[in-house]
Length: 193
Image (cartoon, rainbow, N blue to C red):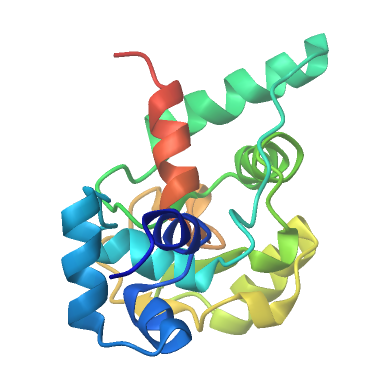
């Protein structure tokens, strides 16, 4: 018999069923049996993986706005994600655009309101084959003040027209990535329903 209180505390503390079985010197099947017996709800696989990758909790800290400027930044960030963000993926915050000012505002939202460490952000540039990838990368690195190592190699697509896209996409489309499902879910909850 495994003590209910000990089992609950270990599991609530983040230990996996395997971790508990090793600590108590019993089989995982025994841990599963007693968890079921005590009605201890098990984590989903995705929750278990998230907990394993973030043992100290979320790697961000949302700060609810207090000042007028913070409320403005909060509204802009949520609005930008609502209009420009990718809401289909469940494991990342992703927003793409060609406007460096718009991207900088969203980065301020992520770092100042959501408490994201800027070093944890990743970037991708999508360009047409008539643009120089090194020039595009250098432009975005300088505009955003981020490290070149945070950028994936630019994705190059064949140019399909000679229209006005060059004025709008002179340095390509930049996508910002932050890989964290909890933050993505928090932002989605902020959107109007």
